[in-house]
Image (tube, rainbow, N blue to C red; front, top):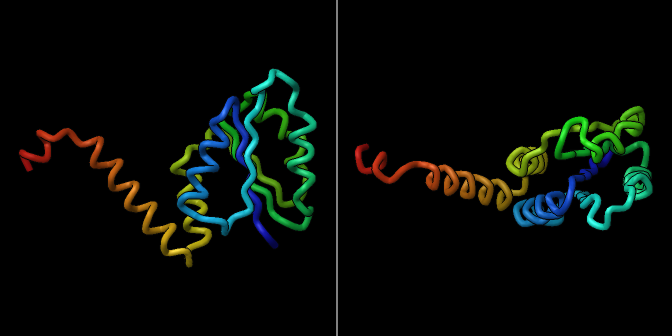
Length: 133
């Protein structure tokens, strides 16, 4: 069973997350993104095409930005489909973590992720706290 990831959000958040994940994970994942409502049109047909493109025997993890938001609601009818999971409140860090550890043999992915996490943590620590330590 293959695992497919769909990231969907309002505006361009989903494609930005997908680009970052591809940077860390490379092309080892089945990853699709949906930037919803850029043209103020309904997204039902786009959602249907994305979900139906995945074979029913494969697992689908659908990540959305807001619980009960319009994007999340458009995917709700598909959670009855076998092996389909809908996960709201998705963050870039959560997705990178999930994908890197799912494809744990990809050392570059894990190394890049931990370097990124360390740099982010260092950016959040005030310099005077480092000097006191």
